[in-house]
Length: 381
Image 1 (cartoon, helix red, strand yellow):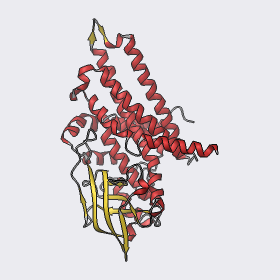
Image 2: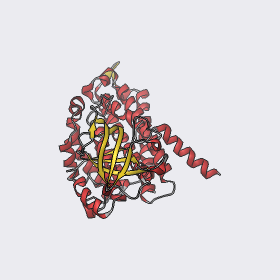
Image 3: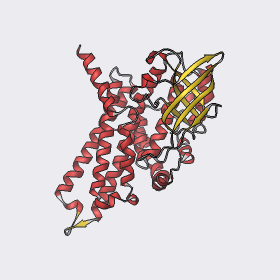
């Protein structure tokens, strides 16, 4: 077990933290207010190897570990959780191509995905299939060398502004065994996008519905064999859950840091806020919860790297715990600011809004509990 980072890991974390401080944090509030999708800044991050963190190096990836990725996404999220989270989604979609694509597919798409010249979205959720992902209805019917796609995806991050859609579609019967994975060019005739959703947070990345209406996608764009799409989706989500937990911890750490700075300057009843014992206890609890969640995240990431049999359960645990802790710490940091925390210029309310959705996406935290309980019950039989 790792309880301390080695020199390389510290360098990776500090590199991402410095990039976040210089290139992301100064613009985060403006991006949120204007709903700006900072593709240019994300491509700068890709120049540091962040566009394909755990992609193999023969196609331009950084060939790092899931542990490294957790460090990177937490560090980036100190600047803006929304931007960090989208880069994590891009990495997840790219990893599916790297892990399940053939040699031609990997060399066609991944070099440009790693530089983020091409940007990818992950398309699983549908209007009637969120937590029950195996019930998805988007249909792909084989027609010679193509599939004809019809259906709709919902809540797709980056949709309309990304180049490739890694989509889970139904090529067979009902249930998870009838799902396959297709890589769809976003400019394919018959592919259209809904309006950019008005959201509580995550405003620096677009969220749209994706509609398929007789869209023809080459069979050559299928990842692996027919019927393994659900397996691909779930494997991708193990890492995605670690990433989103890391983004929660980074955002919460930034909120705690803001609260500490505010408490040092703000006075009440003749004393600085950080001189009140009740508030000292509060920040001690916040820091302890963050450290506990961070340690758990590291354990789960290490388990996924070594392909531990319990890795999926640990990833679900880390996602549930990390996103709950992250939101609660950010919310308490807002409270410590008093009325000023509710003002946008202090940046804390944005973090609270951004982190709230982390308890929902990549599998709701209720579904995380279901995954954990099923694993425990199976082990007790």
